[in-house]
Picture 1 (cartoon, one colour):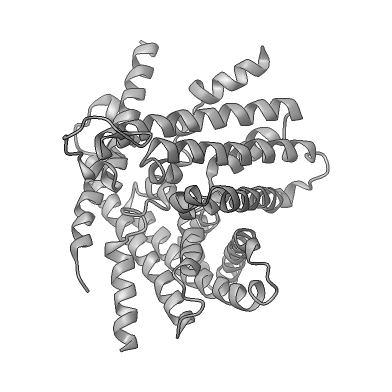
Picture 2 (cartoon, chains in turn purple, orange):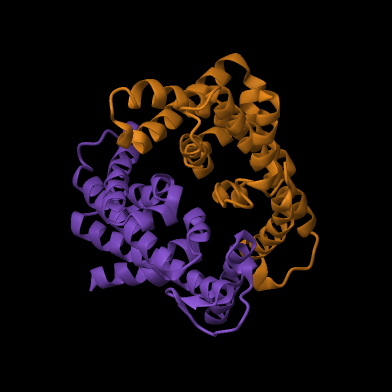
Length: 197
Length: 199
């Protein structure tokens, strides 16, 4: 029950992107299509879960004043694993995500969870926290990508939706990303406001 | 001739491929430190400085350490460690040599380690193929500094607008992040105009 709560927290109550507002760079940059968003979710969740497990299993032997460099090294090692795996088996995905794969290292969500959760909790809770936060990130990424791909490319998962309709190119580019996120955060604020009333 | 190439790199990193508004890197400090113009200037100067230094050192490390020993796959790990220790070093040097500068930049320096624009620019330097190019080191440093200036420009524009927004009557649910992103979107739309520039 406790573990289910951790997952629900990650997806909704403490959603890293939509509620806390961290990890924004990959959120905006890779959501040009739903498949990119899915791959990014997979990559980031793998790193998040693995680093959470490792950090939580070595929490008693890490000296607290040099913990941040140790965490960053652990995260970077897992990112290299993802980078090389994608390069070997999914070269197209690697090309589409580009520098945002190495940039998972500096994603605030992963370091944030290591610092805030994994180094204080058991391995099993850290595992579920990682999964929950990963799903939360995925929820935000896919929500954004849905709007942007449908409006900006007139496609969904690569299939054309409305033949003959001219898509609005702006939605695929940077301004569209900012506007979409702004409207989603606006809607989230409105939902929170209603619940509090 | 080379001067012209360097100038082109500078212009394209500042305006055409602005790191924040068209490549969407470094958004956390862009949202976090853009409330006041003073702190935006402090953050901007610190970022320009660290980006220039980081470009310089990562270039040397990649060319003379990673490539000869065939451990290029350790790029991400090496670069993030270089950036983290560089930031720490710069912080200590500034603290010793110039207390007023430390007072102004001090609080921004630790934040820079997790600024993805810094790691982004060092990785992009490598992917632009400057390693094998003629005068690669100079081009790398120019691209690093240009990226920093572009970041500062975006941050300053944003801070100026947000100072005005304080006085504006924004709907309750739009306050905070949503209105910031709408402003950022409008700025990005304006910067899209530069993409037609031919140099």
